[in-house]
Length: 490
Image (cartoon, rainbow, N blue to C red; front, side, top):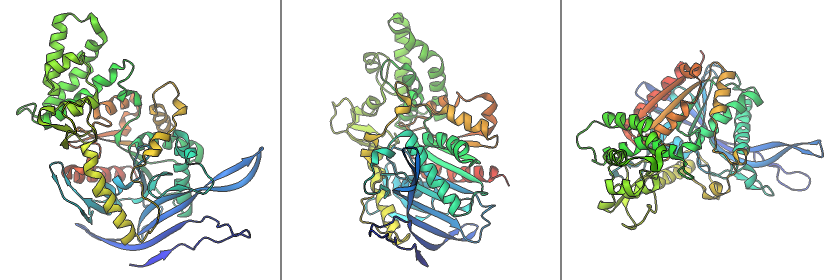
């Protein structure tokens, strides 16, 4: 391997360091079924700069943060022909290590799966299904995640908000594209969870503000309307849209006998689309026979008891469901992936105390990436690596949506109208209780019919991090690669 570090920061007359990019380049090879490929990694931090204006007078470009990135580029490829994909996770407050080490990157973590987890210290293996086979990759950790930090004197909160986040990520992309002479490359954005919310707004921002038109968006476990997951203040929509997820989870844990999953989902989707919203809308106007029928149907679909459904007034809140489904076994089911189970801290608690799916994946992914970062990518840092920063989530501002749910379907629609070649790939996990698939489908149904030919949908028997399930990982890798091939405009 050949190492090449960037030039150390210079100093000005006042001996104050001038922030510069600090990255490490290394050469690698990867064996795949179709032969070996040679590629270069560049990992470290790049300086984020913004225009500074005081009293209406431009003061220049001010360095405000250092943003951690890892870029992979195929050696000897034509940059005008070679696609590039910019990828990130969500949170808000999540680094990009999940997509990086679980699905897209050339190396991946080995952690096992639900019911068959491997013990520490876990493993790191090649990923011959990496998206690098068809696209260069740039993983971005938004400010305050991973190793990304504001510079001395700057306020982290200035970046912890909907618009500020979109603008800062867009600037990192613009800067990389300009520095690497990739303005004429086909470009894609891959986001997961809140990363899909960011992606929809980012596509509009890149196109309208920077003139950077995209070829495609990869929306993994998407959420474009936060109202679909809001159980508060009489929002019965969430209760109905979560029902197919509840049914899928009940099926996985043996509550539907020998029925096929698809048959269970069809029944749940049909009830959630028609009868259940009507039942909820009736309130105390339901007659006794109607209520009895609804209780029975919901109990059958969700695996919960009729007594519980009746006491819950036909409304099943998701946090309570995670703790209720397997309460008789002293177990809770996962939110991120309901295939995972964990021991309940209390068998009489209203909600579970922790997500067993999150517990299962945090250790393997954090250990694998931090080992990989230092030993193979050549990046060392005294900073704490924030896989997920809870401080960011607590600080996050949605001031742009005051008194309403976060909603970016209109921004995605605008980006697609502006750019008639922008295609969107949606990936859904049936066992995802964080951004349930039927909620996401309801979001997409709000797009105009004229945009439908540019949308594609893929469903997997997995959870929020779809790729934790090995059969899904290999299939999803193939699906994403095909999406890039078809929409690279060449």
